[in-house]
Length: 381
Ligand SMILES: Cc1ncc(COP(=O)(O)O)c(C=O)c1O
Image (tube, rainbow, N blue to C red; front, side, top):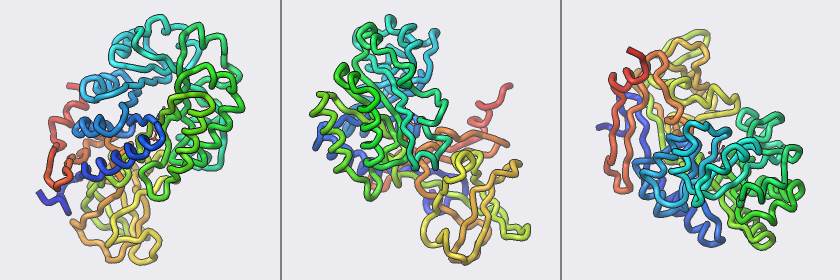
């Protein structure tokens, strides 16, 4: 198996780097008493579930399927949050969970008496906290006006806290942001819900933290955690997903065709639509490619990279390369584990990436091919 330039679209997951990131988080959390859960929504690393258990406090699930995989494969706490619960599956969902987060007072009132005694209850708050950074990622901003996520101050019913045994609060208000942004969210929380902080035992500050990235300000995160512990005696959690996978996975593509339509265009065997959907969902989303061929800002050999599908908008972006491209050249897209594989599909019947997990010794631990049988599972016969 040629890992450096595979012929088929291939995702390579570097388990050694994943473990390094987990170890960094463990060291930090132990230094300040923070609890860290891995949110599985960005990527569910079932092939490395034992590692997650060794380093973190548990996992966060956002559906029945994720929660079941948590209960079957992961260690530690399982915090489940869905924007709305389905009465047909709620009891099964609870059988997998250690904590449940309600998005509204309506769901709390409907389901609280079906929560087993061993499952702790949180409510999700919507802080309506606006800042410059989240404006950039408007589609991902959970605080957007009219967002469906969490209870706003106008909807908040303090009497429900005791009535329904709520012992924790949850907010998820960041999107790829630093600890200073978190600090300002906590100030908003204290300003809007001052009494609530003294009535609960724990706070979960969601995901969106750029942990494991160079320059992340752990010192400020530790100060926020210390402040919540000292002033309100809270157990403090975060549940990041995306940045726990910082530099863990690459997507390898191959140049299938080189054409011109006023500008040079390379058609690849990977696609924005099928394999990197965030490119189409967010105008500000960029995918970098590995050094050697590139420099996104160098005005050398420019190409538009497009996918091998019928969708006109299936464009990965414009890239500037050191050398002119040749057929069969390999392009390595960086940082491709979170929010890619979980959203891959077989649009146009295009193959999903093959998937390879390389362990810390450089050995191939898993190799899953995407074949015709996998494609057939997506069509109705
Ligand atoms: C409730 C909740 N928790 C955690 C996360 C993980 O966020 P991220 O992947 O940005 O760290 C998300 C992302 O949408 C979320 O909605």
